[in-house]
Length: 289
Image 1 (cartoon, rainbow, N blue to C red):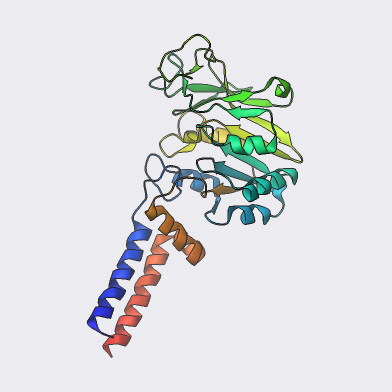
Image 2 (tube, rainbow, N blue to C red; image 1 turned 90 degrees about the vertical axis):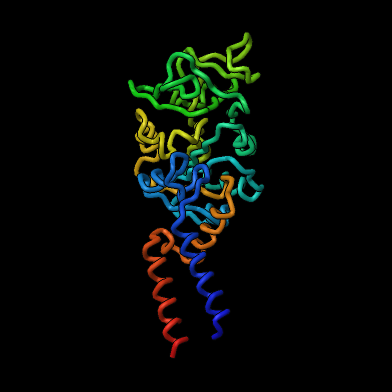
């Protein structure tokens, strides 16, 4: 093999190693160990990750009543994906939809449930908050415990759904939705207490809507009872964490492609890098004979 081909091979190998080892900065990514990642959530819930073929994966879940799917609605869902989620719920699954911008309303409208997520209207609380109004606290229903939100929204329940929808967490009476985005409360804007997490039965399953996926990012997961709140929701169920509906950088896409190609090895970068180095050594020895 020529020196040129050798150099190309080494370059490709180096690129693969960098892709695996270098962390991403993508919001809600399991590959992101930074403040806005989901690496801790995946670890704490021992979640199985969905990176490709979302609809097919949902359809293939066995014993859905023993599982929970967490999805963050930052990208649109196809009709096939929506139908897969509907079928999953009908068969007894627990679907946890997290969204703070209203993009998850596509799912809620398809399911025809009496719930919507307030769209592009941030939830502020000037009094009961962590450090400023953008980090409101919400009381967990039936407990003297709280979750802390981060640039959240609110869940709105239609009048005919008041009996069927169970509120899991409520903001304080001082919170409000800033509909016109002027950062102060104006007459006519919804005031607290406002739901930030609710559940509703759907077929044999349960739909849970949380109006802020940031409660379980790495920098927020240990605030108040954030982690415990989500743990109690999933209970002892096997958790599937959807990564197909978050915006992804090229680096993130390459990581997912490698994960899909090599399976569980990508979950342990040391094993993957070691394997690549062994292959490189073997090939190098062969070339120098």
